[in-house]
Length: 130
Image (cartoon, rainbow, N blue to C red; front, side):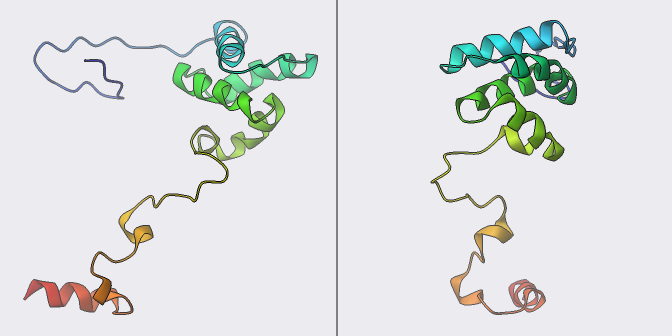
């Protein structure tokens, strides 16, 4: 089994391999170019090639982040991806544009008990404790 994490899982037989950040001007830019070309009919222009190292630096050289950013070249230009990094990692996730956004938490999904709609939150919890 392969798992990625910031911390070791602490399970028997676990082998930890630390993945170091990539140099944005070297291996990071190369990884971005390779992944973008492999995932789409991507043909970079000179401006794209100039912006890739800065984009990789903005992603802290993290290989997974670089790969996810390169996958965005299916729909976005390198410039659009780089500009969207103000919302750092939010640009790297998402689904089809026409797809409705999915709830990201219990509160976003609405109350679990349809009868609780409109009941103040504190009252709902007090009633459940009895």
